[in-house]
Length: 145
Image (cartoon, rainbow, N blue to C red; front, side, top):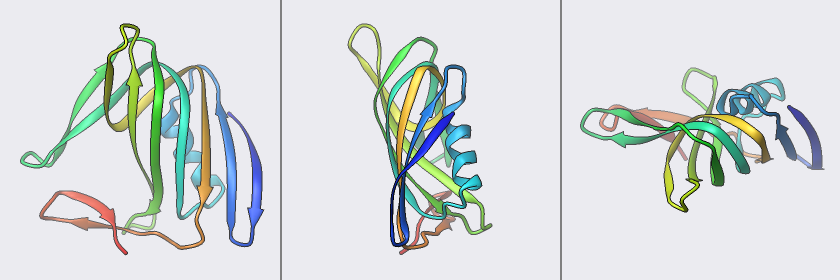
């Protein structure tokens, strides 16, 4: 991965990340956020994956149903945020819409994606420290404001 700081205004920094072929995007973005000590940010990305996994959250089972996309796909939209969990660790939460070769799409909670040929991510740090709080009634952690 290559990256560049695009802007630094008071307490907000904007980064551009360019992921390389073969990198797993969820891990790469999460590791970058940890290395830069990002505690709150929004992100958006475009590019392509050689394969990916998105998820659909099943409220009854309190788990994600994994949807495998085992083919080259275009990242039509990948948007999300980064916040600190109750454990103090950074948590990436993103959703993706992926375009397939026949023009159909698959989408859901972004779980993983192997980059091919690139993924261009704009990560905008926010001045507020965002925190996720676990909601036992839903089985997931949501941003608590």
